[in-house]
Image 1: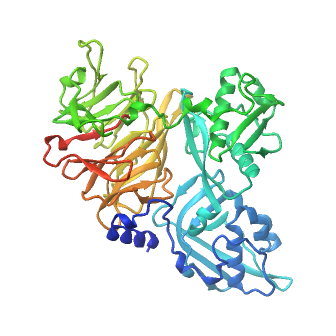
Image 2: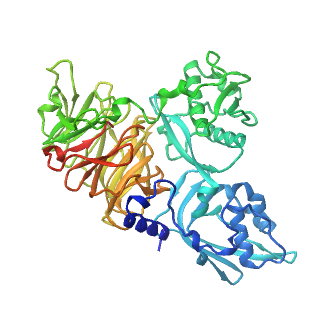
Image 3: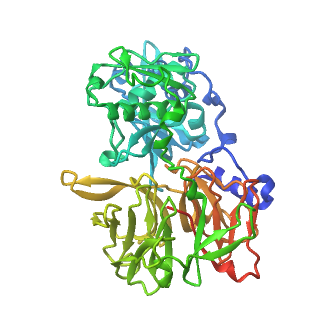
Amino acid sequence: MRRRLLGVLLAVALLGGCATVPTKGTIRNGERQGLAPDLGGVGVEAKPPRANSDDMAIVNGFLEAMSDSQAYDVARQYMTPEAAGEWKPESQTVVYDQRPESLTRKAGGIQLTAHKIAAIGARGDWIPADANDEADFFFKLKKVDGQLRVDSAPPGAYLGSNQVDLKLAPRDLYFFNQSRDLLVPDQVWLPQNLPSGQAATQLIQELLKGPTTRLGNGVVSIAPPGTEVQVSVPVDLGVATVALNDTAGSLRDQDRRLLAAQIVWTLNQLNLRAKITVGGAPLLPDEPEVLPFSNFSAYDPQASVGAMTKLYGLLAQKPQRIVGLDGSSNISAEPLNSGPLALYKAQSFAVTLSGDAGAIVTADGRKLAYGKLDPADNTAKASELKVDEKTLPPSFDGQDNLWFLDRADSDHPRLRVRHDDGGRVSEVDTDFGGDTPVALRMAPDGVRALLVMHSAATKQNYVETATVQTTKGGKQLMLGAFRPLRLELTNITDAAWDKQGIIVIGTGSAAPQAWLVSTDGSSLQLLPGAAPGFVPEHVASNTHKDTLPVIQDDAGRIHWLSKDLGWVSMDADNSQATIIPTYPG
């Protein structure tokens, strides 16, 4: 059964309560205790083949060596010269569920048959496998000078799921959104445990290649084509010196600063400061030689605006501001009566990241209204847009663009965006392949979208990410690059961006819970502090580091996760307990 380890851990966590809930680490397919003893152990340095090894030992040794990208030369020693010449391990890494029964003897070689979990592409992007995909390869064996060797070149490298965290690490490459005011992370998996200079060199080289296909032309790389690092990126006392070639010298002053932001943010995850030169001269001559990270905090992809921590909601179909979550006052809902949205009855509510404006879908489902929450002029009116059929709760990005999706139950759901520059509305091309969108949440950058979808085939909900890109020479917006997260969850009801990734409400092996998921779906764990005394149904969250996730349960009451990881609830007898919560975003 796929993901047996996940099932065991979930059962233990849910039966044992809070004390056994995993709050750190990664849960993936595979069982550590089930590994064959001759696999060489986990994380053991690759060794060349021993003389007179049998077929199974040769293939096991080959798999162990190829699991380490620094040991491809050792792995080739297990191959015939012809196969070694054909093998291209850098093309992809297949992550599979490694078990003793995965390898079986067949005439002329060893057969690998295992559940495929994901493929890591040549650029390092994690691509989840379909539920029924298999890692299936026949290792032909042939004698060379009396010794058995592998005589077939695999389609890339293979990596057992239990070794992913030991061999690879997720790293972010940073690019800019189209408005060039926020960075967008592009996650790739790169070798783990490299010396700091090698790790920095590899990161910057990958950055200068541009974004992966997942982000495509939805983001902007400031580095001109042909920009390269001269030789390598040396590191001394925590300072990485990035010496760019003369190509970057053509950049204007403002673009030089943006390029510096990409490099500084990318290196910061290695706890490195950056010194950047172009043709031997400082990239930013008017700033310190070693660039402070704080100088580039304005481009934070999490858009850390203080207002993002303020909770809002709907009570009796009217917009509210929720106060008291910080303990400074009694918890209560304050009606937003001074703004034009108070004139409507609403079925859903969204707030800009700055907290100054909002949007509602009217209770009758016919209009989307936008207006200031606390206007200085009490005669201010809301602007209205017509919507059709089922309309999902709208979502704001960090540029105050309003994204909304109507006709959600039809054969052709319609996605549009109301731009903050005067209220211009653009239609966004997309094709959901016959599945039905259930929820839409935009990231602050306005490039990445999070969707809960209902599958026409399985009748189950699933979670996927997508990217806003352009077609027709940049004239037409398009939502594409869909990546289902392939989670071992059922009864998924909601999902939201969070500072640590994505929060998903769904069922593992027992009751519905709140789960913390990586943005590429490579890891899944219970939300720290989970195992509450209620059944979660919806989640309100955003990417701000101080935002407290809020859960609405199946009875309509709301609960939020305090900083000490305890759940705090509104009084069940309080009439305000039936609030539909929302954070800015």
